Amino acid sequence: MSLDRQTFDLSGTHYDLGFAQGARTARFEVPAWWPPPPDLAFAQACASLIAEIHPPLLDELHGYADGQQLPFDELLRGVCRRSMRLRVPPPMNTYPEGGCSSLAWVGDDGHMRVGRNYDFHPIQRVRQRLRLKPKRGRPTLGMRGSVPGGRYDGVNDAGLFICLHVALSYEPEHPRPGIPFHLLPRLALETCATTREAVDLLTHVRHLHPFNYLIADSSGDLAVIEAHPERVCMIEAEGDFIAATNHFRHPEMMGFQRGRKLTHSWARLAHLYQHHPSGYELLADHSANLCGHAGGHTTLWSLTADLTTCTIAYAPGAPCETAYETVIWPC
Image (cartoon, rainbow, N blue to C red; front, side):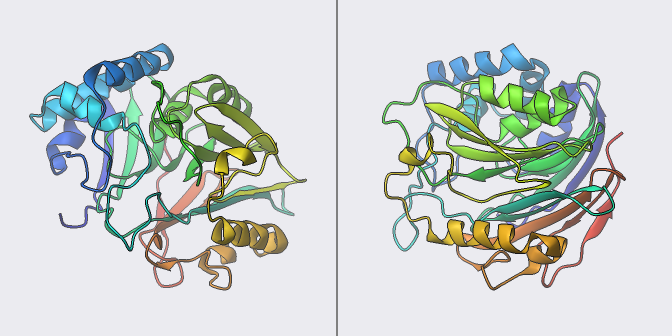
């Protein structure tokens, strides 16, 4: 499949938003490197949990399926992926090795700023940017990957920011239904206005996958949620700064990592905390591989945002060699 860097600027019902996206996007199929999709009953149980928070999101998935002339049940099973394990031969690992990094800080001028690099294998071809104004829910702007409905990072009209990071963690052998990782930023952006509201949402839902979520708002409130299907904890900011990479650091969460190789993730996090006054410059830093160019540590896109002035820019690749483009804030 060719690289899909489409941008969407849509308004209307969630069904219409989904139909427009589905009609313009290559047919959704479960990637060959994913585990087999779950049975329909499992996916429907996940859908019920989504409906408890924001039913219109399921309308969008129905519209997306119709836009692709794809049975809804087939799409839902793909959306509700049971595991983050990779079904591929060596040299790739059996778990994702994405190297996402993010930071958020309050500057000397009082502005709340965030920066984020999304890293993964270049085999991920869908890298769409969407600016949506739904009839039910807050206007949002953000990036999605292969799976319909989700956001990997983004902002809303209230000045709330959220991004995700896969956590290199053990997974339950028999997972119970939960909300897929990529839908949680979308749910937070459409239903929350502040970091505290988003924290409350992410600490009370049932998570399907192990992930970290960095959250910030225009007031300067910062947090990282460390989520596992069996537990959720929060990391507080250190002063006016917080950062996240791909491992758990809360004492109650570290046991879930069970020997995973975390050297790369720890090095990036330590570098962010040590050098954070450099701000956005860190996104192009190679000394700790924050800006990646190989394997699962390839920076597929980067963003910078000032939540105080409601300005955001995206670079469609590694920021050391790709220019940022300012994007219209959602409203």
